[in-house]
Image (tube, rainbow, N blue to C red; front, side, top):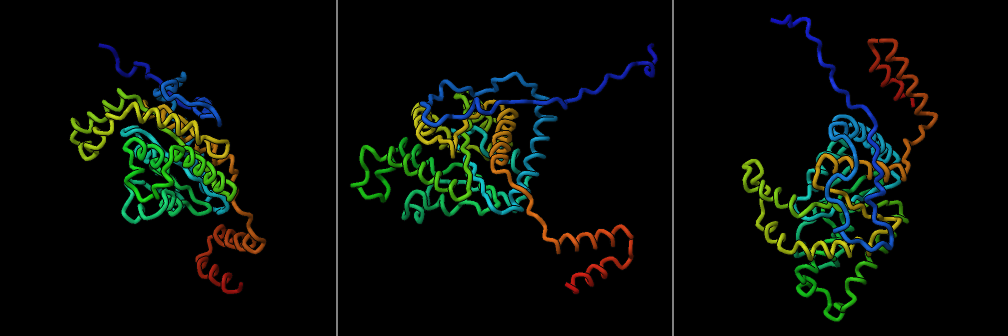
Length: 321
C-alpha cells in the first residue's frame, strides 16, 4: 500500500489570466442592414469558460461597482440600458447576475408588460418617459418602447389602440423609428446615455429552456402558455427585430446583438458593454470642499488616537461649524 503522505498534491488551477473580448463584433453599426440569421447565438470566440466564470466576470463586477459608485456620487449623467429578446433568452437572469451587486439606490429595473388601460390613454412613449432614471442612476428596461414596433406589428395591435385612424398610414413604422431615434438622441444631448442589448437566442435553445419550465418543478413558476404561443411567430419576430435594429442603431444609442445560448458568456459580454458605456461617460467622485477635507482630517486624527471620547469630540467639532 502506498504511503498516502508521500502522494504529491495536485496544484489548484488558477483562473486569473486576462479574458479579452472585442465587443464591437456584436455592435450593429449605424446604417448597417441587419439580418439576425448571420449573427451568432452561442459563444463564438476562443475563451475558457472557467476563466470567465471564476476570474474575469467577478473582476468585471468589481469594476462595474466602482464605476456605478462614481456615476451615483457625481449625479450628473444617467445611463439607460434596454434589454430586448425572444422569450426565455435570459433577460431576468442577466439582470440578476450582472446588476444585483450594484448599489440598489442607484439602479432601477423596470419591466414593461402589456400596456394598462391608463397607458393606452397616452402616447406609446408616455410610460417609458415616466420610467427614465434620475441623474446619477442606471435605469434598466426589461423590454421597452421597442415592443411598440415589434409585438404591436406581429399581432397588428395598432388598429386596436386609440391612435387616430388617419395617422395609421403605410409609413407608420418608419415614422416610429424616426421618433425613437429623435427621442434617444434628445436623451443623450441631455446627459442620459443609452445602450441597447438584444439577447440573441437560437430557436433550439429556446425550445430546450421552455421545455425545462415544464419538466423541472423548480422552474414551473416561469411557465406561460403565452411563451408557447409566441414561438409560432418566430420567423416574423426575427424579421422585425432585424429591421428594428437596422433602423434604430445609432452612434449615440447603439444596439448590441449578444449571443444568448451560453448564459455564462452572455453575462460577461453584457458586463463588458456596460463597463464601456460607463467609461465613455467617465464619471468621477466629486471634489471635496476645503471645509470637508479639514473635518475629515480632524476625525482621522481622533480615530487614530484611540480616544475613548471620540464620538463626543466629533459632535463637538460639528457643533462648532
